[in-house]
Amino acid sequence: MFRLQEILHLDSHETIVCMFRGHAFRMVSRVIPLMIALMALFLFVFPLFSLGGIGIGIFFLLFFIDIFFLLRMVCNWLGTYYVLTNRRLLCIQRTGFFKKQVHEILLENITELSYITKGFIQTLFHFGNVRLALITTRGEFFIFDIGKPQAILDILSRQAAAVRKRKPPQTLQGALRPHDSRQEDIAEEIPPAVLPIQPIEKESNNF
Image (cartoon, rainbow, N blue to C red):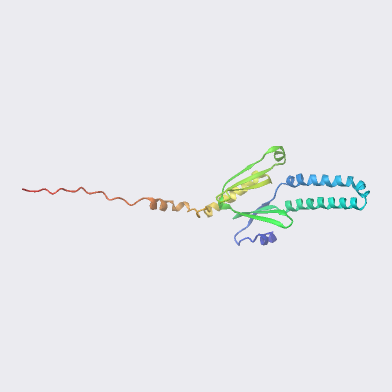
């Protein structure tokens, strides 16, 4: 845990609430076709080896290509995870052996949370997609194929509500003013009172 805090560069008052990653079915569904292709390749090992050096070269070329994509798929799944702290949500996404993307979402900028479970597979294995509506130029952010999305949504909702009580959300124009300054805003918007017009007395001419 301390190693993770050093990697994420957490503040002194920031603590990790939980960590989660995509459902294992997402990785398995992509690994199975590669495993089938690898097993099918060994069925042709004798015909390929009978061709001599060319057949052996083709076999090892296809073998290493399959192993490369297999390891890349597993590495991407293991290297993609989400870290929720008491201030923000960090989304670490690995899309290759040497490529990693990190998204930071401040909890006070989350305005709405929802999730969707679609199809027989997601319903059977209890995973789905979580949607975060944000007060930023991005507008929204999706967390795909997360196990137990209802539990993740509840945790995010509680943490976001706790942060909003301590700090107002950041908008495109700046931070919103706290609720207790609303009376001052209303007072500033009221125009100054208009003085009543005194009736003009006509002078009477005495003849």
